[in-house]
Amino acid sequence: MFPTGFGWGAATAAYQIEGAVAEGGRTPSIWDTYSHTPGRTVGGDTGDVADDHYHRMRSDVALMAGLGLTTYRFSVSWSRITPQVTADALGPVNAEGVGFYSALVDELLAHGITPAVTLYHWDLPQALEDAGGWPSRATAERFAEYAGVVAGALGDRVGTFITLNEPWCTAYLGYASGVHAPGRTEDAAALAAVHHLNLAHGLATAAIRQAAPAAKVAIALNLVWVRPETDSALDAEAARRVDGLQNRVFLDPLLRGSYPEDVLADTAAVTDWSFVLPGDLTVIHGTLDVVGVNYYSPTVVRHWTRERPKEQADGHGDGAASPWIACDDVEFPRRTGRLTDMGWGIDPRGLTELLLRVAAEAPGCELLVTENGAAFPDVVGPDGRVADPERREYLRTHIAAVHAAITAGAPVTGYCVWSLFDNFEWGWGYGKRFGIVRVDYDTQERTVKDSALFYADVIRTNTVHP
Image 1 (cartoon, rainbow, N blue to C red):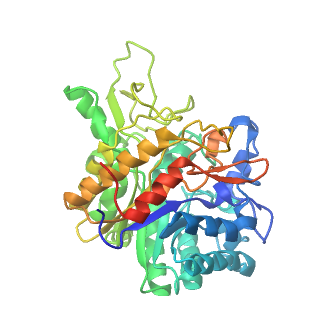
Image 2: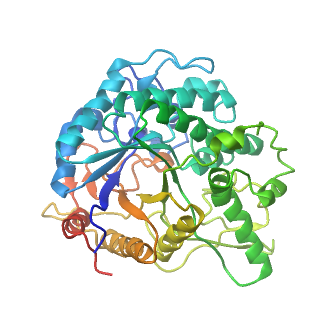
């Protein structure tokens, strides 16, 4: 059994489900620009319509209630809230944009579902990218002001605000490898983005606590369980580098008030980190009430001997520039065994290990699994049923892994499956389905998959068979 009051939820992101990109006063984000640029997404797919959640919000919430969800994590589109933002000023607040999210919160509460609000899930207003984007300090400053606006509007009914989702992806995939918006390939800019994302979290925390003193502040990090392929010293060194760039460059400023010395040394040829100004780390440090953990797959690394073509199977390289700065001698061997439709390995032990690691490094913080799930090539049967046994088994074993962490002492208070709906899967377009609810993109019909029925039973019984 899970603890009484454990939060059972699902997660989504605004650009992936809302659609209505030119309605309600919304202006373009970097993902509008990126997805409309030829060659950037599979099939030229965009989020223009997505799941049409903007128009189907109330029926979607009723569907959540039917599954028994007790919490729902959704993100707010910055471009709906302050559509005229510039590097110098936040601009006027758009009442229609605020109204949509306020109505969503009210609808959730009316169905007994606790809202958790993510303030940034990758859809930076295009105007801010034009002025420099996340490598610019001004973006962090404007983000804090935006966070204060949202917390002021929703904080009387929302108990948890998640500042950023997966800043690793924003910084490295957006500015180093270019496989995410805005599509830049500039290593120094990516590292500046790392710091300004951390700073944005710290500045936003202060703004949230001023506007909504009772609310908890969280961040959602895509932490990885890094495993060297062998016991060799060279493979261990490869794992150290990856752990530093993915995990510690975010955890250490938040939890220790410093950047890892080895990461600074590894990246010294790229940047001198002079964008870290006096006082910044004080602003970032000690700002968390809740640590959100996003986990999908283990990361296996090894030293690249240069005797064969370099593999980047789990390194998010996708054939473009590598996001792994200062890791020229590191490779990510192609996985064998069970894989998801993304080609990611399956090993729930990594979720247990990460939760225990964060519990040890962040005493006094609650832990929340903010994302966990898998894409599989679902098939609709002749009876209209979507039998997805692979996803069901993935969820069963990973939920059991959460329970194992709790049993070992990790203070995990909730779990959010990724995702509630099939949706726009960023550069992959609509070809990858993570949802426990199928979406027919032609008709917008929702179909509850077998995995959703399984999850509803887990929620109802507050248990899972290990």
